[in-house]
Amino acid sequence: MSFFASVPALPDDPIFGLPALFAADPHPKKVNLGIGVYKDADGKTIVLNVVRKAEELLLKQNLDKDYLFIDGNQKYIQQSLELIFGKNCPGIESKEIYAAQTVGGTGSLRLGSEFLAQEPSRTIFISEFTWPNHKPIFLRAGLVVENYDYYDHKAHKLDFPKFCKSIQSINPGSVIMLQACCHNPTGIDPTFEQWKELSDLIKKQKIIPFFDFAYQGFSEDLEKDAKAVRYFYEQGHEMLVSYSFSKNFGLYGERVGLLAVVTHDAAVAKKVGSQVKQIIRGMYSNPPLQGARIVSTVLQSPELTKEWLEELKDMRTRVQDMRETLVANLMVGAKHHDFTFLNRQKGLFSFCGLSHEQVMHLKKEFGIYMPDNGRINVAGLNPYNMDYVVKSILSVFPSTLKT
Ligand code: LMR
Image (cartoon, rainbow, N blue to C red):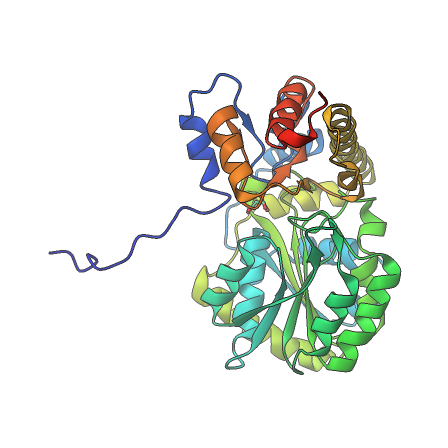
């Protein structure tokens, strides 16, 4: 009799469970619109040229494989903080911002929430519709998880009045999870004016903002995508930022991220750092070497940085083109249904307004894979599968087909 016989089986992960299902599906025209990974026009996961160049440079240096510090590669940390908060952010120099290299963005969210959960029964509020991994991460860390209103599913837009109202009922000392840009899964972000109002409300309510910043460069550009985080910093919030290089460097499997804890007092930041380091030491001791070395090699070279920005722009532009093409093609076939709301969405994802039944039908009948919430990875679209996806989506909205 196993010690573990009574352990209940859990369902597969709503996003990471998809590749195995997709691989096993014999459908000849199957399309994978699941995990948020950038694909090129041939449907391939690419490695950026700058990443290959950095790897070659690193190989030539014959570097050792010694342990990093508990909180990681210090040069990488400095460079990442400059990307997030801007080169001239005073808190970097003054060490009022404490930061640690993390095991990707997910590792950073977990680390940040482990730190926050040291205060017993602390609550974190997540948006109604969010990345399905947020809740399990925070629950496992020991936080209490509640929702705030965010998205109006019927109108396909941000429900800003309800969002504000939710904030006004949050208790002081609680945490609010905010997505800095390219909201996953809705693709809908607050405007800059709305961010300003949110900052005021959050401050008034004495809540700790915790930004998930995983898509810098996929909405407008590096600078514009950082505007909300930088504004909150300028407004004097104490806050956390989880950052990921998975998407903007295409370093998914290298697990390269960062956790920043913003304080406005270097002595406080030092104490925070001592806690965060102890959590890291107890979880995985210290982070992996290679991904941070790659990022750092690119960011220390003006030429490589320029090339990276061009490659990032190419990725962003292709995704935008695919979204516009999708909408234009859907509108050709749709009679009563307006899909133009999709053009308001930013980043890798589109939230098409598909019901659970429609998602199941697309999977079963057409071999089109996406998470159950109906989010599609727009980067999974290309000129070869576009018609098929459009026809399939239109077929699950039968009343919308032109007769
Ligand atoms: C996604 O949302 O598809 C990505 O962020 C990958 C992940 O870890 O779920």
